[in-house]
Image 1 (cartoon, rainbow, N blue to C red):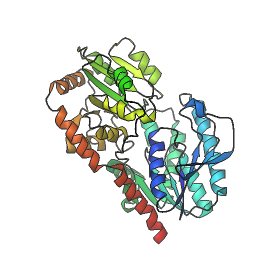
Image 2 (cartoon, rainbow, N blue to C red; image 1 turned 120 degrees about the vertical axis):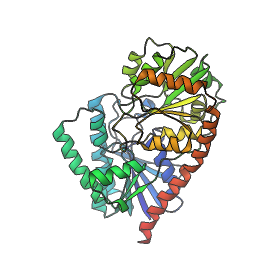
Image 3 (spheres, one colour; image 1 turned 90 degrees about the vertical axis):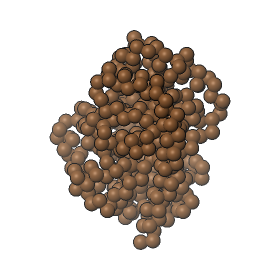
Image 4 (cartoon, rainbow, N blue to C red; image 1 turned 45 degrees about the vertical axis):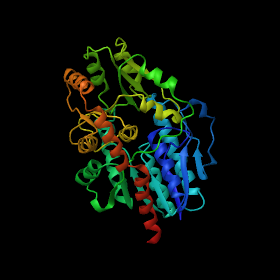
Length: 400
């Protein structure tokens, strides 16, 4: 059975969707013949080459067909739109012409239009279509205040509902996302499968991590880290305000990563010495980054439950570190943390209250217990098990 996997990002890109897709492709390679249809690497400028229609390479015995979409900086709005449009057009052309014909087409949602490209490909190639949703658009974009005209949002939502009803199966990463699709999009529950991103073994580091840990921890007794995208999903200014109010210079906050709000957040926190921003470290060194923290931060704005579930949750669990989650009480993140008692859920919008909660957590004797609980939760949400569930769904279509 031939399976086509569609997503703009794939290693050497290190985004969450790129890594998840790689793990899925490797797992599918044991039971069928996967082909990845992706864009050019774009997170690292050194991989941004000149224009090309498409090229084929093999990574870990997986065939990867890359289309040469534009690769403007993600912080440049018009450039990002051009990246999406050129990726959509080139992906559809390449997918319709690709050989061998795919029996199953699987699309992720990075970028949000990837699903439309995959649907067109599956229609012309008469393939089964599985839609693997990480973020629910246009709902997420509209909810975070992205400047989308109402008419455009309505048209986008209309076609997105058609897309959801057209596909043969839908994979979502959380129960709250499934509930939202059923209640607000009218999708049949038996068509939707919940398969979480899951915890994965960190790659083998190339260094002993001494320099990375020293850079992150500096001279602080207690360090909280937010590792990941600094976009519009999180209450990052609220977190910065909370650390401003701490009055405890032994506690440091480190943001590791990039994102659309990074420059704005750096300016907002520029007079706070205990708050620092560090660019991405090499993917091979992730274990050192996560182990350097005493506490991992996750933030989701109210109203975004069911629209997004940060994969950094599972990375923090794998690192056996407590989690401080500023998220809605009804979100999947909150439910997991409460069920496994691996952290604290702080749904407050008051910075002073949040700072008190952080100090109380630092001074408590529960951090070690939370670390043990995080390790146990990580085993429950092991990515290998989640990926196995996914491959079983794919293989079932071959039987039918």
